[in-house]
Length: 131
Image (cartoon, rainbow, N blue to C red; front, side, top):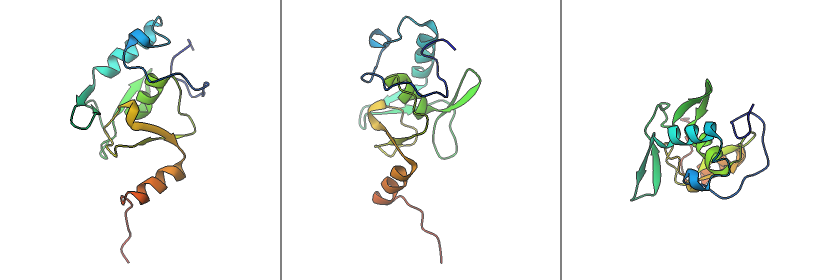
């Protein structure tokens, strides 16, 4: 698989968040440029919240969904990988804005499943069973 393409292997963490191909570490790779452009075509920025709304396909819970080389990706996970250069395998990508359709890399952070559950409880988003 050519360098820079998404894979299930986790490379070393990348550099800073990249907003355009001009600053992207793999800007010469035509595959990455096409992926970046295709991804950003499905993003609508919301100035009031700084969220980047995914306007492509979505799951019922609001999380964006796309395909890369025939493989399904959650849009926020792909955004994290595209903009940081780091594949989040083994981690959940958490939304600091609590907006499931947001793909702004500044609103995303890596954590464990337990981190995600703790964040949900702390913010009062946990579902309580009836009893």
